[in-house]
Image (cartoon, rainbow, N blue to C red; front, side, top):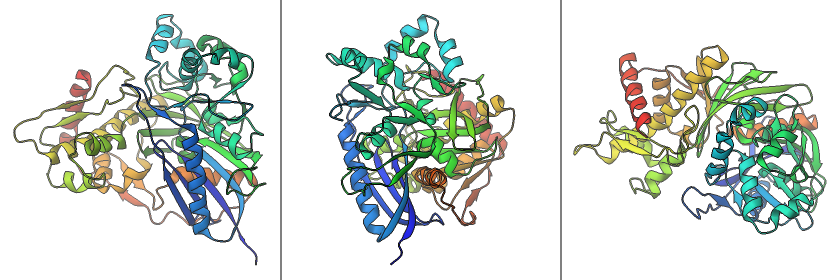
Length: 488
């Protein structure tokens, strides 16, 4: 019996791992998911157990493979939570410390010291990134300086660093490959955005030994083959690796300069394709590599809000307003407006374009008439308002206006949120029928890397949300939002 060639997309995210098995029409034949725990040792600190990440990949892969039935896996693509930092022993492959997650703020003092030294402009010029605890370099430095004997071992070449893609490539290849791709490398603050190489200057500034670093490869190409991973056949080509947001941009087919997408996940991530040359933002956005294939290198501008879907989780787990996240749409729709309530979701500081790590969350405008529904609606508006700030900054940097924004991620199932986003942005929101665009992007890149032709259907199932809020109402909400941001 001839087995169908399929592509596997592994999406290792902040709260769990999703694995999709897709055919050449990009139809999902199998899907697996495994949640991973987060730990919060101290305020502002967020950690993962790298072994839990690895086990989640194996579990989700087994689920997806079993559901797909008898198939021939042509290639595997990986996409991942990005700046999260993993260090492991080269000899044993075992992690030497918990992974420091991208949301973690413990390295603010390191960044502040470098800022006082006047180094932020140089870091921006070389890497396209701002000086912030968000990125990997300061996390590496913290681990080296706070784990006994680790810096000495790193300098001796005994320790490997990787973002999650690199850790998974190591494990999937049986320790044969220590590699990352250009998109993930461009999120470390150690990578030169022009030369597409590790920067010795940045390594010196952050105190990161070059011996730690992986080789840098393309986002699509023959990177490695599987070997010795439980439940995964040996010899499968690993042909794609990309950070989750860049993978979503590719999955959304934002292939032309000016095309943009927003992923609604734990955070909110908005990227615009800016073409074959990096753009240095004038509005504190990030310059990053969008992808590198055999035929092109594309760059993007990016703005990130640290707390998006996590705000709804907080309403559920922290305040008890919701019993499950899906209730937010029904509850928010039960009132006609926010009742004057504004939420600033700075639960982990404020990301772009504000970049205020000291900012704290706030709920303003409460009265005796405020109900849980008003807070739920204000939370949805806060998620959308952060993206409005990002889009306005991006339009000015790119010199073009946005007429539509493609969206993906779990929160896009909330149609009220999508309508609020269209209203407050004043632009169409396009929600594809397939919303798992991160894993889909990894699969598209993997297919290209192995030379497999895809024949997906046209996106006829997309839902378009048109703005319908009066301009005066939008201006009033935006004005109240700016006042609230200033107080956070």
